[in-house]
Length: 458
Ligand code: 4AD
Image (spheres, rainbow, N blue to C red):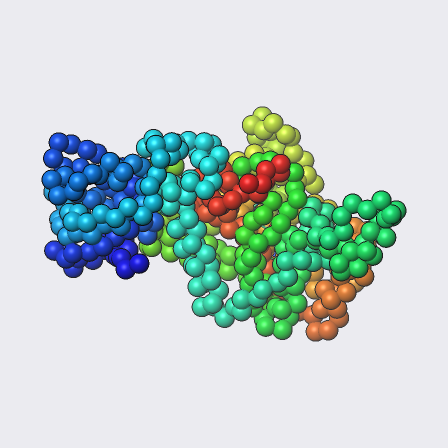
């Protein structure tokens, strides 16, 4: 269907005076005695194109005026009469592509995000989702650009796996075996299954990413991860997009430096390429968002040890619902206090107690902590989980044995420590979490097309 993207018409003054065809959905409509006006959006920009209709030239325009209707419109692009520096289209021909009945659910100018979650197929047609999904696309492109331009190889790690990377047991099983009363034990069940052993959806591509990094030096993965965590919070989904670089010959300070550089690159890309969307989020979701992000992109992030953070948290114990002691995992309220009230900017919290972190993290010489860091950002909390990996075979085996892990399931991973082991580090960035941070949207369900959360799949 020959037509012009509306974004091109706004960007390019050469369209003024030219007869042009556009397609889109009616977002607003207004009727007066001789003239009618409707705003068309085709999804290529947040801006709507005003269509001006001289009623004397068209017989019946009733159907065109209904919100949600899809149209193909041809006419001359002219300078807007009302809005300075804008353009509109004087309709000469309108073709109805798809009529829309009066019960179209998006009738109001602004609906609550909660209501929009109940109509996932239509909420994408709102300004909010138009802006979120475009920012998401730009963030994804910027992530690829950053790694590609720094000699990283993009690796596709398996989605079906037999090993649990995070060791938390929060995995979705992959099975072809249904209910069968003849199967009496778990072993029989696993043996009857497709792979002849237990399989699950991957929680992280890290373990396979490490394999690739031990040959290619610098790699990254960017794909879905799955967690069957029952945390029904504003920042957890069961299926999220996970960016996981893995870098050989890198210690913890090296990977921290890269993570900061990458986040700043992504922020600058969004500010540069999504000016309308960012104005929209600044106005409707977080006042001062653009200024905040510019500031973040031009200053150093903070770095603080877990132990220092615990001291600060204990001094402010009256501020929290859950008291905290050295050795405890931090709750969201603690993480947010440190980044929002103490550092007032993104902070890398480093050197966590080894008991609360994963088996693969490098053990520090103090015997108590591991060389791990979480990047905490104001408003969201943790967006990156990162560590230097344990490169010493004996120490890795000891950490796995303490956790009662089945070494036979991790043969490849362990072998990396036998054959030319090197210091190496990596991290996982949750795509939805960084989208929340750069848009100011507070619920992860509103930055993903179809959120999967405990008890809900639509
Ligand atoms: O801290 P996590 O669990 O780290 C790992 O999975 C490591 N294997 C990553 C690595 O080193 N390669 O997860 C990393 C990030 C979190 O910081 C968070 O941004 C995101 O993944 N994440 C989730 N995002 C949304 N919903 C969930 N349920 C998430 N779980 C983790």
